[in-house]
Image (cartoon, rainbow, N blue to C red):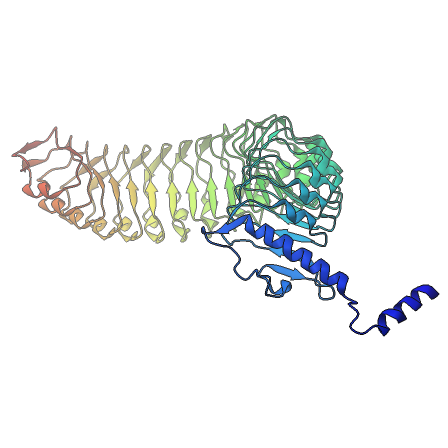
Amino acid sequence: MAPLFLLLLIMLSIPNFPIFAFPHSYQHKQQQLLLRFRDAISHNNTTSLPDWSPHRPLCNWSGLTCDSSFQSVLALNLSQMNLHGTISPVLGNLSSLRSLDLTNNALSGHIPPQLGQLSSLRSLDLSSNALTGHIPPQLAQLSRMHKLWLWANQLQGTIPPSLSACRSLHDLRLSYNQLHGSIPPELTRLTSLKYLYLGGNYLTGTIPRSLGNLSALVDLYLEENDLTGAVPPGLGRLTHLQVLSLWQNNLSGTIPSSLGNLSKLTDLYLFENDLAGTIPPELGMLTDLQLLYLHRNNLSGTIPSSLGNLSNLTKLTLFKNDLRGTIPPELGMLTQLQLLYLYKNNLSDTIPRSLGNLSKLTKLDLSENHLTGPIPSELGMLSQLQLLYLFTNNLSASIPRSLGNLSALVELPLQENNLTGTVPTELGMLTQLQVLCLRRNYLSGAIPSSLRNLSKLTDLDLSQNHLQGTVPPELGMLTQLQFLYLYKNNLLGTIPPSLGNLSELTELALSGNHLQGTIPYSLANLSKLKRLELSENQLSGQIA
């Protein structure tokens, strides 16, 4: 201790002794390293980072954060600066660096293995670039690293099992690269892991059962890969899980009932797989669930009435399965629901009147099932509804006049049912409507002149019904109309010359009626017309 004290006295007694020579030397070294890094990148083909100059204090350079005492570079953040070029290996010599963020640029080349030398690094974000090559196994040396984001690049090869050595890691995102091979079971040693994103790659094999041991996991994204086998029941042990995304794989087997234990789950994506069996009633226990996507599988059985307990659900998609039975009236309890897609199943019986309680619903698609009975008038209470698809069922009775209350409605396809009665004049109140398709029903009466109010209408198909009377001249006011199909009805009278005002019209089909008189010369004004069908009438004349 005494010699050290004497040395200090000697240093202080010498005028202008460079006490801070060592920190200054290190600062100069950092400056030189960063300038070499800058030389490897560019910005719009010009010199990047113009304020990085030897004549300016290092810690005033853009993107740098320094330690206030020794002026050591702690963080380098150059995200979203449109940088090109490669990442220089010299960054591996910035020994004090804790955070490196180069995300959202256009950097190419390989990830330098020398980054594994940054023993103080806590966060590494190279996402959203054009990086290629393999993930360097040397990154496993970063024992203090909490966050590793490499997603949205063009990285190839396999996921290094050695990453399991990064025991402090809680956020690993490798999604949307070109990684292949299996998911390393060794990753389950990362017991602090909260976020695991591996989606959008070419990963194969099965989902490791041991993922169920990652008890801290909050988000698990494995979508858009080529994973096979079953959904491991052990995932039901991840009681902190909020998002489970397994969509667009080749997963088979059944949906594990144990997923009903994931009490904090908000998003469940299992769509576009080969899952079979029934929908587990236990999913109705997920009271925090907001999104439930099970469409495009091979699910069978009935829709569990317990899904009516999902009071926070906003979107429910079960379409393109083999579901049978009735639509549970309990779905009408989902008062937060905005989207309900049940189309292309084998559902039967009537549409529950309780669906009229879904006041926030914007999209309802029950098409291509075997539904019977009338369209519930209660659907007219869905004031926010934009899409109402009920086509290709066995619905009967008349179209409810209450549908005219759906002021936000954009598309109304009701074709290929057994609907009778007239076309309600109230449909003319749907001023946002763009598509109205009532084809192949048993509708009768006249075409309402109130349809003239549908100024945004692009598609009007009333064909293959029993409509009578004349073609309303008011249809010529629908200046956005592209398709007008009135064929195979019992329409009389002449073709209104006003149809020549439909400047956007590409297809006009009036065949199979009882129209007579001359073909209006005004139809020659339809410069965008590609298809004109006037056969099976009593028309004369020609189009100039």
